[in-house]
Length: 317
View 1 (cartoon, rainbow, N blue to C red):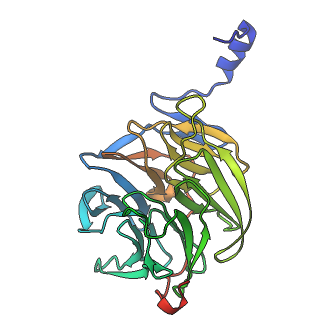
View 2: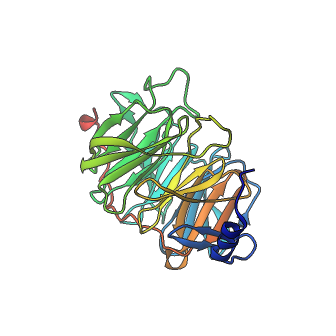
């Protein structure tokens, strides 16, 4: 144990904020409430998204379902979901979804009917679409690692892509170890990608819809084991541009400058997260068999991209 002089120890105690049991203070953000279990008994929860109208959606991948939560009551929205993972509501209220059976789709929330936005690249199905984010132009950035994918991989590599509003699909990069979580900064000038098999979280300059410039390592995730190189899973974003990255240690909260602000601990290992609820100040977390919520001192950022018009196979490349 490192020695701390008594005076310094006293100063540290005096300066620490007072928090109730289970609350967590995050530097420059504020104090989060304890993680409260909303529902349990699932197989593996993922992909939470809030529509701003009082509805929360999330997936149970092995159960092949998308769930909807309204007024505190849970119901099945879609079954089978073709093993949906990441979800996001677009600006028109459609539910965009990554189906791990190999395609990106949009659901009409009134009818639960889906249409394919992107099903192939260079004539081959995707490996297992994982997570996504929609931009203001109605384009969708999405990741395609190897989890639940056929062997050999249909695409021959893991990568992340951009599906433009007209359906044109472009591969953006294929040099990360299992690209998983993906999100844009509030001004949409930076794209963040979280690999699952390396600790480096990447940040790319966005020079146009689906066009990336320079990249850098934004942050190296804290590890459970010294010398480890494990990555993260999903992530969400608050209005200040702070990233909330799900890892084995909890949600690692990272500033846009790449500084670790703190870690939100969850009873089970978290897979993904989103903001929602009243004033968009509830943090919802999918974690293995459960769905949790935490009161947040800051609101989450809402992405308001227009609805994609749909695929155009002749423009996929």
